[in-house]
Length: 203
Image (cartoon, rainbow, N blue to C red; front, side):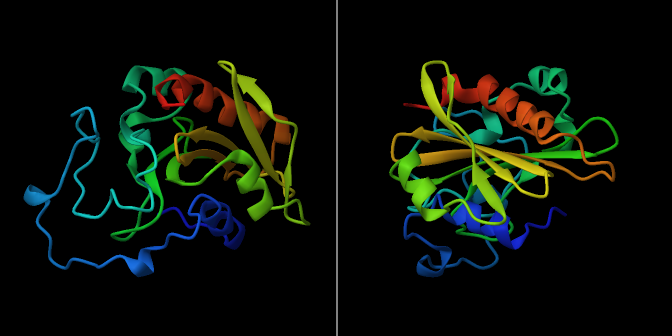
């Protein structure tokens, strides 16, 4: 089970823009047979969800679905194990919507890509300013689009942010091994995942 740090939860909340799962009613004992299992294009999710509010007003700002954006073959080329995929949301009605994968090399790396409503990259930066834990680096340009890059000062985590309609798509790579690599290497993997999926994110 992937445990999010305090700062990771804060970073995810950047995408929420005032929306939270507390305002959403919860459904108990929901059968997976009655729950939506496809993205907006009808592509099947790579897992079976029992969360009938996996898609909700807090993450409806874009139709982009991280869990179906990349084929298994491409995931493998980038060093991620397709069979390791699981839902990023731990409970029903969460703000974030997306998936988590581990690396194919003994699980020393974790990548997650999630969607949550957000008005802009600038708004994300204001909600999570540079502090002693995190720092926004210079924006990158991928496919003629601005990509925010956020690093964690302990050197184990790097995130990208791409605006998609009225939502932000955050891609986060974390190193879970013992010998921490250069942060540039962590960001390279986050940017590679972003580059492989950005064309599917509605601008």
